[in-house]
Length: 83
Image 1 (cartoon, rainbow, N blue to C red):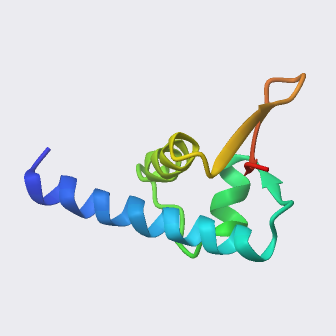
Image 2 (image 1 turned 90 degrees about the horizontal axis):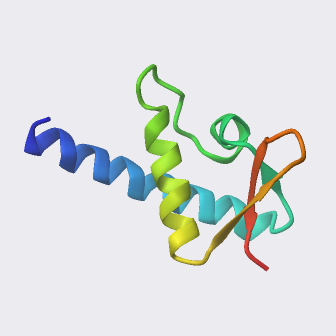
């Protein structure tokens, strides 16, 4: 992976983090799966091979204490703003 590609991915991840934060600032009780976040919370259109970017953005927001994850009985992971 080239340095340029890593930097572009970092930029996209930061943009996704901002979009998720902005979405939840207006809808603080929302919760959704990664696919739902892609469909509803961000402007980024899913591109084959780029789904890992939304996962990384969500993981970063969990580490920063902004998001939390709840695992449902069927194993589905739901992400929501940490209360």
